[in-house]
Every structure is written in C-alpha cells, then in structure tokens.
Length: 414
Image (tube, rainbow, N blue to C red; front, side, top):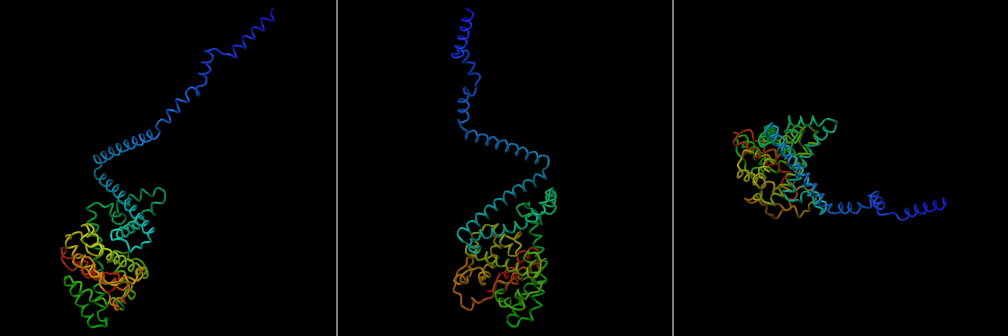
C-alpha cells in the first residue's frame, strides 16, 4: 500500500513537469523577456533611422545657432569694441577659406587640362597671385604658433601688429585705407634714390638721342609733369644693356627697386635680382590677360587693386582716372617683348597695341622686334613711373605716383 502511494505521487509529479499548466507557462514566458519583447524592440529601431538622425542634427544645429546668437548679442552689448574685432576676424576666416577653396579649384583645373599660369584668365591669375601672397604672409604666424601655449602670444601679436601679420581680410575698412597709404609711403621713400641714379648714368648712355630723352624724362618727373607713354617707350633701348640692365645693377639699386615694388630688400643681391625678375614677369603676364579681358570688364575695386599693384596709390583717386592710368600702363606693357621663359611659342609673341578701352589688338611683329631683350632688362622702367611720386602736391602725387616708373615697370623691354 505504502509503495503504491509513493509511485502514484511520483507519477503525478512527473506528469505535472511534463505538461505544465497555463500558470507555469506564463511564468516561463515572463522569465524570458527577450522572446516576448524582441520583435517589438526591433520594429521600433528600424522604423525610421534616417529621419531620427536628421531630426537630431537639425536640433543640434538650431540649438547651436541660438547659442551663437545669444553669444553675439552678449558681446555686442557688453564688449562693443571687442565684438567689432571678433566679427571682422570671423568674416576674415570665412573669406580666407573661400579663397583657399577657389585656389584649389583653379589648381585642379590647371592640372587636369595641363594649363600654365600665364594661360589662365585674368581673374583666376590674379586670384592665385594674391592667395600665394596671403599664404606667405600667414606662414610666419603658423610657425610661431607651433610651440605649446604659443597661440596666446599669436593673438596678442595679431592685435598689436595687424598690418605686418594679418592679410587684408582681417583689416577694418579704415585700416585698409590707412595701411595702403603706409605701404605707398614706404614705396615713395625709394623714388628719389631711383631718380638720382638715373640722372647719374645719363653720361654713360652712348646714344645721344637716348641721353636727351632720358634727361627730358627726369626733368619732367622732377617738375611734376606726367610723362606720356611715348616718352617712356622712347627709352626702351636704355634698359637693355649697361648701365641700366638689371644684370648690371648694383646691390643699392636692386634694394631701391625692391622697396619701390614692396618687396623685401633684406636679401643677398642674387636673390633680389631673381625676385625682381619673377615679380615683373608675373605683372607682365597679368597685363596680357587683362588686355584680353578689357579694362571695361573690371569692377571699380578690381581697377583700384590693379592700379595699386602696379605702383599707383588708387585709394584716393576716382575710378575714371584709375581706368585712364591703367589704359596707359597697358599701352606700354603690350608693346614690350614677351618673356621667352614662359614656354610660349613664337606665334604667341605677336606684339599688341591697346585701344582706348584697354583691349589689345594683335599686329604683325617685324623680325627685328622679336629680338628684344629678355624680361630681366626692365625693372628700372617700373621704378621710373613710381619715382616721381613725392615731388607734387598730395592730391596730384597719388595719381602720378606710378607715372613713369610704374609705366616703365614692365618685366621686359620692348
């Protein structure tokens, strides 16, 4: 009896384990939540992940803009002077970044289509030239900011010496005018030295006619008379060989020419001569591209920038007078011989004349004209048109500052 009861109890226990009731099944399901909630969780995650990411990004961007706006209002309310500098600095960074991207696109296009620098349109050529100059100016700041905690010193130097360390993107409108006047004043300091040297070499010129033309030109400059383009072109032979050829110039003359073109004079004479050659060659290539485009296609700011680069202080001169002066410059520049080291064929060496609108017209080149001097024989022509700047009243001298020197500042002799 007892044994049968034990067997029955064991069988009942085994039966309940083999076939659990509904309560036990529910407990088992609750004990394994992964099976019950897995489908629900997966459907929620894969519902719209892209929309969730976009909404998150838009939320972060909106909050950032709101905080940035509050920060700007706080600076403008409590620190107005600092806010002006901060705004100019941020806009300068944006403009410099845009210039860098444009320069990269131009270089990529040059590499893809095998285009040389002198084959670019005027605006692209000028953009690359200006961007290279800006990068070289910012290079010093990048070097001194490498040591740890040196960035604080960099900000202090930028605030104390904005003209020497910052590019024009980071200048205030008033600073742009003042700094350009300062740079032009530095240019004017070498004008008297250039004219004095030209007068001293007049007896060394072998041709009597050239001696007379050079004497008349120096006299006009000293008397404050603006020379015509023909007066400058008549002296082309003087700058081909001794004593005014650039290869025959001494260190003092090279330094004076470098200062007149806003190049550093604190280099050995071979480096100064090489920089003068490169600088005047780039200007001549820009002149060729500008002559193809036409002065009438330039904006007022582009005209003033082009005149200032070539030696004229255009910050206080009307736009129409700047266009007239630039047309005179192109008339001379289009009459000089193209540098032979640019890789252009002889068919491209056709000389050009400039009409009143500043557009060059090709004309036949006699064989003798193609044997003109190379680009390194004329930086003195460039110096001539800047040299008579300081001998007139301020209102007139700014227009005539690049008269003969800038007009003669072509990279090569005709």
